[in-house]
Structure formats: C-alpha cells, structure tokens
Length: 345
Image 1: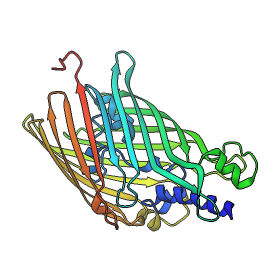
Image 2: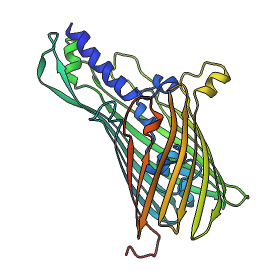
Image 3: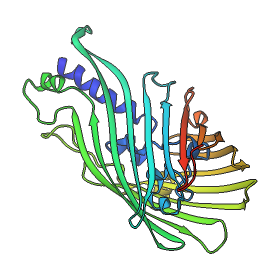
Image 4: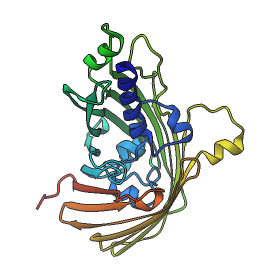
C-alpha cells in the first residue's frame, strides 16, 4: 500500500509538470525544456527563432546572437499556471556577450519548481519530515559566429538535472537502495542557423534542440527521451526606422519524439504561432499573437508589451487564453543591454 501511494506521488509530480503538454511532448522526459521562456516571445505567439535579437536567443536560436551588437542580460519570472497549482514557479536567466576574435558567447539558466509535496502513509497521514520540493534545472553555454555577412550558425551545450523525489522515499518503495533514485541527469546540444535574406527586413531562423541521451530516474528502471525539438521561423520587418518598427513573424515547433504516424497526424501535432510587434521610438512596444497546439488543446491569443528606459527594458507577456482551464499565466522579463563603447548612464 505504501509503495502504491508513493508511486502515485511520483506519477502525480510528473503529470503536474506535463499537464499542459500532450502529443509527442508528453512522451518525453525533462519536459520543462519545452516550456518557452521570455515575456517578449510569449506576447508574440511564442515566435522568436527568426528574431533572436536579445539574450532570449540562447533558448530559441543561438545563431541569432552573431548579429547582436550589444551585451545583453535578461531575467524572467513566471508564476507558472497558478490556476492549476499555485506553488509552481518558472525562472530563466540568460546573457550574451561578444569576445573579440572569438565570437558571441551566451549562457542561460532555466529552473522550474512544482512547489512542495507532502509524503503520506497508507492511512493518509503525513510522514514525519516527508515534505519535499521537486524541481528541474538546466545550465547552458552557447556560441555563435557569422559564416557570411548574412548567415550565422550557433551551437549550445546544456547540462540537465531533474529532482522528483528524495532518495529515502524511493528506498521506502523497494526497501533497498536504488542508485540514482528520484533524480535524473542528462546533457544535450542545440544546433541552429540564422539567415538575413537579401530581401530587406526578411529573416529566417531554424534550430534543432535537446539532442542528447535519454534521462532516467532509476538506474534499474526505464528511461525517457529528451524533448528533441525542431523550430523554423520567419520574421519580416516592413517598417524599421528609428521612430517606428513593425515586425511580423510566424513559427513552427515540432517535438521529435514518437514520430510513427502519417504526415497529417504529425502536422496536427506541430505547434504553430504567429505574432506582431510594434515599437515606438525604441521606447514603447506592444505585441500580439496567436498560438495553436491542437493536440495539446492549447489554442488562443497571446499579448504583451514593454517599456524601455536607458539601458533597461521591462516586458510582460500573457498567454492565459490558450489554456482550457482558468489561469492567469504571466511572464515578466527584465533586460539590461549595453553596446560596446557606450555609457550605461
């Protein structure tokens, strides 16, 4: 009985993390890697692979860093799906800096916690000292360089750590020590390309992400594939002056796990987004978008905005309407950027 109840907790934690993700994404491990960060992309239907002009590029498309002319740092916080569970938080920190003669180097840190869980016995009573917090994290280092004036490539490597349940709870299930019990580790690489076409203002970006070994929580148990992901985006800025800038973008995201169906089913299980961003005088930005994940039943509008002052920018992105349950899902981002040779004042 104890074994069944503890196993139920383990399964419950996994379900809690993966609840918004169905289809191919639900078949993967470390699925927190499929949660898109950044208030700015979030406001544009999660489209950013063909924009990638700030530190969030380290998630969507490393190659975009090669065209950035500034050092950029971003912090993001989200009270993740509070309508589902109020104790989940999603954090992201990223940065990009140019090293002369080497290229652009980026880094990011991703963290998701599902909050506290209380272990109980077969009678439904709390187990002493049985309160624990589950979390997932990834640390990534990226590199990008130009192959030509209008074409760049990027590569990134990440370490992944997932903590679901304390070891002693796993030991209680089997009555013996389990190596790696309750935790999982893995690593992965990302490959990307960014192309500024000869048509002024039209960019194309693509990335292949999370290529690495499966993650396992028990050495004696099975393993799950990482959420290998392919992104393809197009962005067009018909207006890009110092006063006005308008950007239109669209993006396809495909989780490359369990691909055994026909092409129509795979297309149905592809995430699709469109977005628009208007910026006035490099000071005020407004954004809107629409996101389709038909299989995952996440369909609806997204919106957001941002204000820039000196070297700082504050953004908010909202995608609450894409979920089929009531929730207030906001991403809050703070950026700091400075161009080489400029003053921070």
